[in-house]
Image (cartoon, rainbow, N blue to C red; front, top):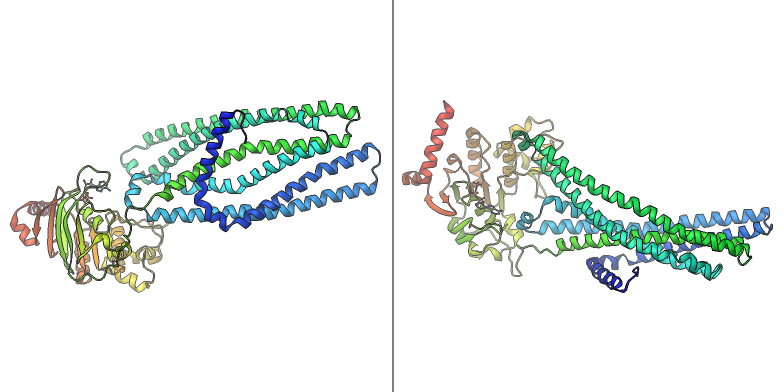
Length: 601
Ligand SMILES: Nc1ncnc2c1ncn2[C@@H]1O[C@H](COP(=O)(O)OP(=O)(O)OP(=O)(O)O)[C@@H](O)[C@H]1O
């Protein structure tokens, strides 16, 4: 235990016991990889043992030199010893690197898979509470820190423990006990300096990391929102704000550099005190003939090994603490349970025979104070189409979110025939629904892969078929590599309307029983919209369809239209009935007619 005062010792025990418990999550991994670590440590110890032979060879050579007994054959023999030791060290070092560093790489691989797959099981609300930048940092920096702890950290720790003990024993046993005790006198000071500085370095490293996370967040946000920044001529303001954050990072890094600048020379100074004592007292012993010159040379070589392995202790403590702090953060993610998951009695959703029913649903988003839907009841008969219209923020998209069970219901229920939504397995529920959301998010891959996303087997004919229905095929023919054109980053950037139509094609290829189109024709002109709706008609004939829109032209052919206002249904009926009603729907209609007229003129 590297501590000086009793209280400090107790504190350290506490920290270490608590810190170690963070690694419980990795128990299975260590059980599986125990032989890699055990054999790795065994070969590492062999390397350390071989290192201990070098001072002995030096002792022998020096003694023989002093006594004038060294012959040509001896020189060759010693050279051979050194070469053999060197080969042994290289060979065993290769083995432990393959085993320990290899196992730590496997740990990194295993953890990355575990964290990523766990993140994807978490509910939507989790992502509302956590920033993407932070999560990215966990998946990269924290996993890296854990790998460092169980790769180079384990190696340095084994070295530090073994070499320290072995070097002290060899110094005392083969040279002189008193000289050993005297040479070790500055060591407590060295350890004290390292533990104190270690903590400071840890704190400053953390603040530098936080400043780095801030700057990463800022960069990510700015690059994603670059269009908004340009449109609002905020380049200069954003650059200034970036400079500020960068200055902060620079200052934190400089503080760290200053600390290191002080720490390293201090360690060297304190360790050189040991050499001063060794030279002063050991030199005296040689002059007095109490020890040989070879003993003196071997002693100082052991001391060199000891000092370097003691200096590594600070690094080991630091790297283990960092690994533990990172493990704690990763554990927090892994402990996070999906709020929405299958109940123990969840059943597969069969084909719907009668209807989907919203029964008095009142729903408030977890981070909101006001309900997004209030006492909402709606029956959607199988194969029918329902249009949803209303002012922005009236609750339209929420209907889709609840049907997909992206959020949990608190009041009321949704039934698929007579099955409450919570009794349906999530997989079968979501597989039956084709959802085209407002964002029309596309992955940076080919158009074909974007359309076929989520489908195991699809042919290019299937892709073409759904693209034609979505009114996208003609556009794609103009692209350089047609369906193989890359979308986003390094490929072509699609227009808003093209993105929307790609999302429609993606939903259609699933051949879902229920199709939800959420404001996904807003970016296409009314002529294209008409063509798409016409093509969709045959597709939606036997499908339960929900069309959410702001434009009356998008949903006027639906079997039933509901008008939402302030989270409740205020009108419902067919297009004709609603027009006769002369309510909000009629107002929308009048306004849109007027807009069309103005546009025509
Ligand atoms: N994830 C969320 N967390 C908290 N509140 C939300 C969330 N999503 C929506 N809301 C709120 O719930 C209400 C209904 O939102 P919803 O998206 O259903 O409206 P909408 O009618 O689809 O609007 P728009 O026409 O603008 O798409 C709004 O007041 C909105 O601010």
